[in-house]
Length: 196
Image (cartoon, rainbow, N blue to C red; front, side, top):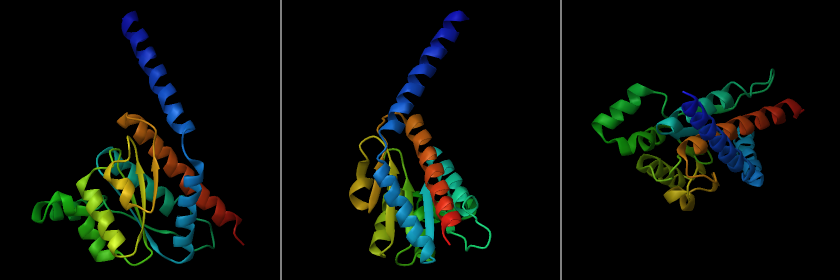
């Protein structure tokens, strides 16, 4: 039992140390640029779409909640945010009737307008359904943002702005994306509260 505890402590120490490294390596100028993009979308009454698969789907949903509710300031208009993986009936209908690779793009066809913002969350940067949706967004003059890890994958060259987490561990990449969601949404709320 003691060996298991020591092993767990060792793994936890290593994991946390690596996570701290990923957080310390974040490019805060890029975070500021993303906040500026979202602030412009808010100011111009544009929509924000967020998407991800698996753990990143949960992060996308959480991020949309924080941007949609966590930024509310009494007396101010609200940020218009939609998470594309939250409508399971629509996701499964497009997946079944067309293909899973089109589940996000097909939703954007219904909703996107020029200068809307699309945020793609993918650890690998190579999810085909994410890439197809971002390409469609770009073709329709939306502003695209990527949150990724590893080497950024195929997402990096097709988005307007990207943060690549310095890690090759899915858990640590996803942890860092969640932190970024909190930092960005709280920055937007701070601007709203300070804006007169």
